[in-house]
Length: 365
Image 1: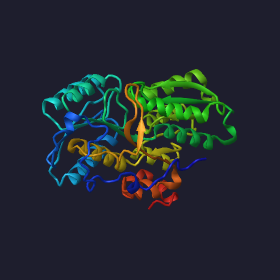
Image 2 (image 1 turned 30 degrees about the vertical axis):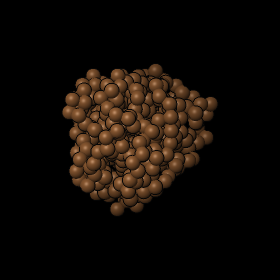
Image 3 (image 1 turned 135 degrees about the vertical axis):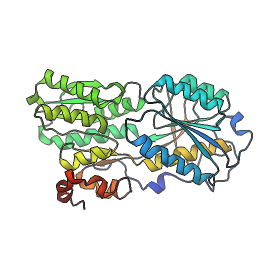
């Protein structure tokens, strides 16, 4: 089983633009935005999609704010709004950012297609847009995310490894993410590439809005349709849904390997307790740093070349300057060497009284 999809030191993934000093216009920036060079006193708009997933407000927002401050000698400001999973709200937030004359926008789209017109509005106003974590449609200037197909492959490989010789002895349930999120389609494609022909998929769902309660309802329906004795594993696209899935499995008296993603604290604790088999650790710092570096460079009319090492195509644009951050398969065996070592969580955060025995058994003290 592939334990580490592509593990690379975080420092190598986010190359600072602070000393770049290039005055040449970025490929991804628009001429109207970069024709007048700006100093450090820039205004960065940050739009995140929802606040149910722990990562966005606990990690992404503060990390981006910190990096923008660092890159601008504490003169740059971040104007923040959260759409709370509402695409119409996010569209209105883009309008507000345009009215407030931000110099650049970082947007994690609720709906990658629905945001298209808003991205065009921003471009028309001379405001470049960095697509963050999800590849938005429209004339975006840069993009950063994780290697999403590899995420799905990593989950699929972990599930196969957990099932071993029993991979075709029953049926698995696949709980994919929301159809409005292009990442979900990539996770699904990567997982299918690994799993197809090696397991029997009994039921498969696209889970509305990634909500744990929707995953829980889907899992209950799958158990009813397939029978609890026939389910041998569950592919869950993220940790939040895994929590809802595991609640349904427990209620039915079923214990099978369940995948996840995001290394949420509750997911890490479930892994230690043996309730969830794995998660995908996506180090937020290099992704957030890259978004901040791309945004500051675009606002200041600098080159993206030192950060955007990749090129990505969206349904509306080709060869978008991008940085794809590698991921790691997270299991009991490497919690200490990943999320603890990187400072995502402290041991005391993970090892609450309810998980003290599991932590001791795993050598996490």
